Length: 468
Image (cartoon, rainbow, N blue to C red):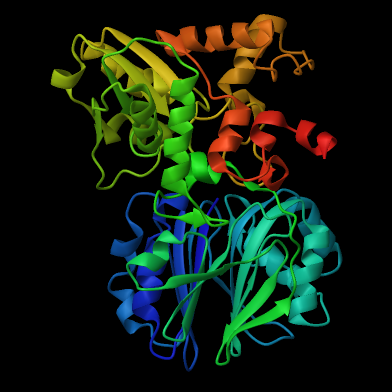
């Protein structure tokens, strides 16, 4: 998804920018970057696929001096970019996914535009956004109108001499939250970046809202709208436990999610465990509700190992999954285990690098309990699953009904016989004793927002849009 952080301070902002950006490291594994504006623009971008953000920038940030800055942990594109425009020079970062990047780039090329930044063999989507902004009569109009052009989502920070402009994605898929400390202002994807730096939450930007942080503090530039559909997966997996979106804390949602899993379960077990780190909160909730003790048969070796879900290459995902989890045989041997995970996406890592370790350490039974329903559709709004071929639920459907089937409605109904067959197929595929997914209504209840305010596309596709 990427994570972005911006700051306007009365003093040199480099220290807070470094650590505020670093607190987004769980949001991407491709590139990290920072830009500071003092007497001039200073910016650095590094590949962080094999190293930590902080270690890459620890010496460089000491030479970056200015009272405003923006930073990013990027899942794909190199950023921030420094752009010369009719509005003056500005730096830009973005979080989200522009699905029609190539089509828009071809239109601009036909108009005589050129692209200097290329990412992953294609146009850099952040540069594309900058060029779309430059087509407006004003900076604000340019930002507003780019949302008429793009498919997908994009929350944006633009830094120029009069401040840091922040625009939340018009669909509200990705969050942006403003914080304040003694007249200094920050804005971030993740509110966990505020806490140890002493900032407190001021407001969540509304979808489509644009604000400016400058010498006069926080100023509204364009009103947003109250209707939004924020990504549900932020609470279930992507977000950090200490973060809040729409005023709702991630860890508490995961505990409620685990309680819901336990209420709908009757399995007998000796212990409850969570796949570290994002499955832990769900497992704690399950243990609290069921009375089965929470234990740690799998521990994560944190240094140097990020999330196995976010790297774009399967080889890197497999390496991370292999190395980061260590089995504790003395906790595992002979025990019946309820294993809570945030989700099952491809199923290969769960089978080959998680359950295999439990079985080899002598587990008697392993009952897998994902905290969300089966993922059925590739995400259109963030860089995660990019094709149906990646999804184990789709592979199950093809095995049952054939690859050319388009009749998914019964598989989306957790009370249907075909849904049961799909789940049984996945359980066998991943080598679980039993498998029971979270019901979508229970997931929504655990999050605590009205259904219409949540993006459920990964699980329901356009079915939810049709209901709205």
